[in-house]
Amino acid sequence: MTTAQTQELDVQPTPLALLLLGREADPRSERGVECPGDLPSPSDPDLVARARAAKERLGDKVFVLGHHYQRDEVIQFADVTGDSFKLAREAAARPEAEYIVFCGVHFMAESADILTSDDQKVVLPDLAAGCSMADMATAEQVAECWDVLTEAGVAERVVPVSYMNSSADIKAFTGRHGGTICTSSNAQRALEWAFQQGEKVLFLPDQHLGRNTAVRDMGMSLEDCVVYNPHRPNGGLTTQELRDARMILWRGHCSVHGRFSLDSVKDVRERIPGVRVLVHPECRHEVVAAADEVGSTEYIIKALEAAPAGSKWAIGTELNLVRRLANRFAPEGKEVAFLDRTVCFCSTMNRIDLPHLVWALESLADGNTVNRIEVDKETEAFAKLALERMLALP
Image (cartoon, rainbow, N blue to C red):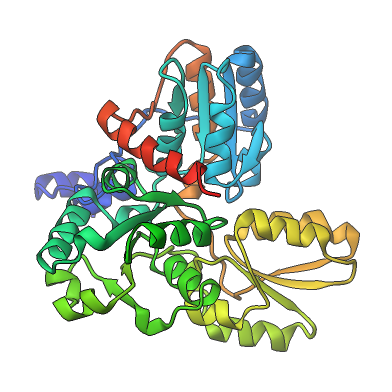
């Protein structure tokens, strides 16, 4: 059907279609999405030169952060690479930078805005670069969950612990209710602290990290954990289940790490004799249980750095990072393979591409601040409180 025929029939694009095009907002999401305007063509052969020239024009006024899961074409312009929390802290350590260009996803840019000064401007090259996991827990849903816990008579004994991969609103909720933030590296310390404050933990928004930390690292049982489903009445749980549980896990997950299965582990062991399986703790519990090692992105990188020549590794995390590690360590005689046969990029992270980065840098160089991420002051104050509790963990 042609455009003219569509107009004659008065057919309007659906909100989902507009969202996928980056031209609409998702009312169920914590983030807004707007079209940034005309971008350079992705086939422009001068994109690299244009990005380099714009960055040079900006000089010390700009600091570019690149998450490990970003494309190589973007990573080459990053002043620092790392996981979300490392990058937010790096931004806070650069008070002289007027612009922080965060090549990551929306919640990461929010965290950077929370931790940097009011004079600094955090820019996300594409506002549609969100996080499906972070979007699985909205402020309204979590507030309703707390009401359910209150009616069950357990809220006063519950301490919220929210993963760094959450919106500013969820971090603020955590701060208001005496909880803390955690990363995949310090989740156990955060949970140990929380259980010193109360009897139960509400873990947001990744059920797998919460379950794996509680059961694998802290010796709890699977029966100690229940899953709160925000799309079912009372979270799909009975009052007695809430009273008996120690870990109340939010029904959220990472769309990348959730794809790995036990079959993936079995298959790679058959294909690559002697392989060591190393996975991220956002993977399902049965995958983590079957792996040889489990750790954050930073842990994965350090493990491969320390690995002996000739060792073979199957990595269960985002493909951009795995491919970069494979290329990096091949000259050292280390074989690095992707855990699954299916290609598994983080689709929203990959929205930050070279055209968007060029557009953002050139706009800033011309004096136009685009796609600025700003967290309101009240939300920022409570979110920072939760982050500071994490920083104070022993």
